Length: 445
Ligand SMILES: Nc1nc2c(c(=O)[nH]1)N(C=O)[C@@H](CNc1ccc(C(=O)N[C@@H](CCC(=O)O)C(=O)O)cc1)CN2
Ligand SMILES: Nc1nc2c(ncn2[C@@H]2O[C@H](COP(=O)(O)OP(=O)(O)OP(=O)(O)O)[C@@H](O)[C@H]2O)c(=O)[nH]1
Ligand SMILES: [K+]
Image 1 (tube, rainbow, N blue to C red):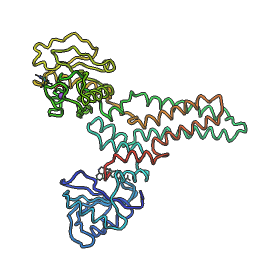
Image 2 (spheres, protein in one colour):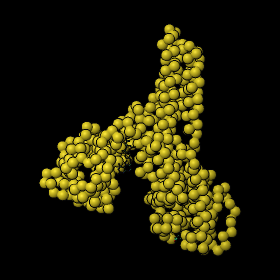
Image 3 (cartoon, rainbow, N blue to C red):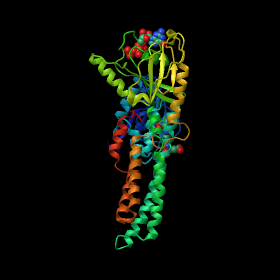
Image 4 (cartoon, rainbow, N blue to C red):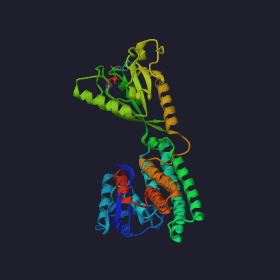
């Protein structure tokens, strides 16, 4: 990854498209503009230009071209943009023309953003917010991602880190003053008071029930129950397409079928699973194993049973997170609520008539909202954030517990806490984390 290279990539979606955006970033960007359009246009103004093959001068396209000189650009480097007609041949010819400019090469996934990070345009939490914004499927996910791109967590963490370093400086100054390794109380007391406040703020941020992570991943609902109960039919009716195979043969569904719903902004992942029963068929056994595993990990289980045959109860481990859905009420006749053998809510549906489905979806939406939450965006949205903040708080706990012991150790714990916050925003130990994050990035971002 040589950052003195100039990189380029198609940043817009899969061609053919009405318009395609090719971006260029790096020191040779002005050369690339000169080679392809014969000039460097006015900074940050859209300019219409003929894009030519540099060697033959043959016209490739009529394009809108933009020049963003660094450091006031998205990556912090000199950048340019070609807004082309989005045909495959146009894009291929422009990419080929750019590759012929000395010092220019195709970008790797996430390389523009990686450069923005290294130029200090984005901290690591903003980079993650950007990745989440591109991945967001629903409004609630989009809002959370945008608030992180705008620095919700990054700025908080930087503020904590700054205050921590102030406290650390007090303690270390005290250590320098004293011969016996004891910090004068006049320095130690205000430092530790500051540390207590910080520790409490960080702990409070962590006590969010995991709603940020849950919104990012989507609220997971597993459909489980005995074979032939109508699980796949229920799923298909909800998504209004044949996502899962329906048949009168018990044991049809083997693999877990996953669909994504947007219930008024709340992301819900719905899983259809194999009917739970004892079976000698090894493939079906594997299906049952997967069904139990996914139901075990779900936020909520819809225990589906045929309204005419409500004898099966959910396995012990999922009972406390299960609602019952009695299906095929078009056949069952009267939809009298039977005695409830499990505590959760009860629904009565027909995949044939659609009865009961709107009520079920409204309840799922409300439950997702209750568990994921609306309102204040969450600070912690990834396991990585949680780990870094837990480590910080634990180090601060240790520092506070040391107050009667060695002040050298207090200083050391404050250093460790600051380091964990530094890791959170990407100031230290960053390369391994970057590789993991950018592995999932699109080319051109
Ligand atoms: N055509 C186009 N649309 C796009 C992007 C792009 O690169 N090209 N973006 C790509 O992500 C997003 C917009 N993000 C951007 C972020 C920063 C700057 C930028 O020039 N920042 C400078 C100057 C800021 C200012 O004028 O206030 C800077 O940060 O110094 C541009 C786009 C979404 N839409
Ligand atoms: N009349 C009626 N038939 C239904 C309804 N839901 C499902 N069925 C029928 O019940 C049978 C089983 O449906 P599936 O949706 O495949 O059941 P499943 O629970 O996914 O079955 P497994 O894959 O064996 O676990 C099929 O013949 C469906 O047509 C319903 O609401 N009304
Ligand atoms: K099925």
